[in-house]
Length: 277
Image (cartoon, rainbow, N blue to C red; front, side, top):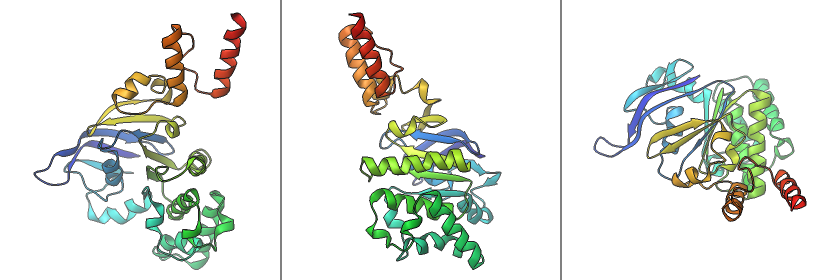
């Protein structure tokens, strides 16, 4: 478990507080989506989780290890893998398999163990056919998956992904988010998804809403995705289907339930209502 205990953080002694009294727990095997607009503090929180930044006050414990203790930092970085939006800027090798192998090689593992980790992680992400490819020739979604594979090869307990879909087209986003859901459900790896978009968060176990460096709410997705007015107040774009239903209800006095989140169900309900007219 990752325990965040009344954590505050500023980039300088005289600067503004970026995070203020953050209290949060992330359980093993959980999928948590942290949502907020630009400047809400969510990226700073991501960097605190694996010890890139250290709290000014409070503490973060990763499976009981305090990130402030220098003797814990290497192990914490192995336990908490962190991927940034531009995965290609994290590549350091000329082929996909060499890049994925870089982390395990620095753990002084035997060659057969390194080979097994590379093969297994690429297979998990359906990237085994690209092992010999140069990373820069891959699509955006494939690059992100290689970045995730490099983290998985370190056998982390937690994956923290900062806006993994921000540089991708819709196809690339679907590739990456599908891979994350499968890793969480099939492999039991805890996922912390940092995002300003609601759509990739609706399959999370829990949504954490951040605003101005503070946690404003924590809830299951169903408690927030059907409240477009609240989301707009926090400068978060509601789901397109929710906005459509909201507009239709405004024109026709609550015609549809806001809890419809599937296009097929929406069409079915509209057809049913038409038959009644």
